[in-house]
Image (cartoon, rainbow, N blue to C red; front, side, top):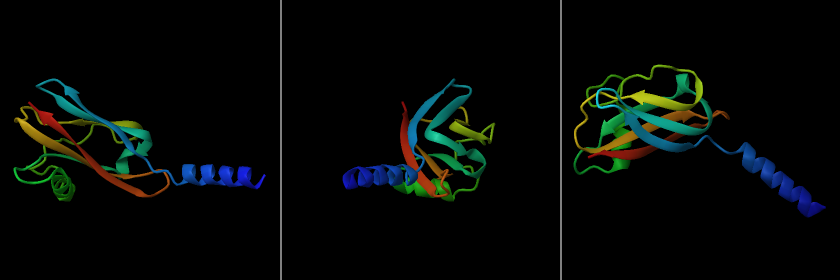
Length: 129
């Protein structure tokens, strides 16, 4: 009985302590209207989330570029993403990008407020051939 209670408590705590995760980042759209879609493990409040997409500068790591991207103000010339069309609670965010991306590696960086109130920061990269 004690083991069963311990297992139930462990499962309850691990579920309660779980934070929102990004489960996928995909590039899509057309050449004239490219997009990046960020998919989450659960709905997030997009009004309290920050997304930045930026080319990874030569000689800089993706993590360094992600940190630099999150420091950029929305609309910065260094960023290639445009403001998202909808800022609601959603399980994905579709980020419009500037058309005509040059070849290279790009970083998608985010700062989310998870449902339990904890900030979640991360990044992923994609390449433009």
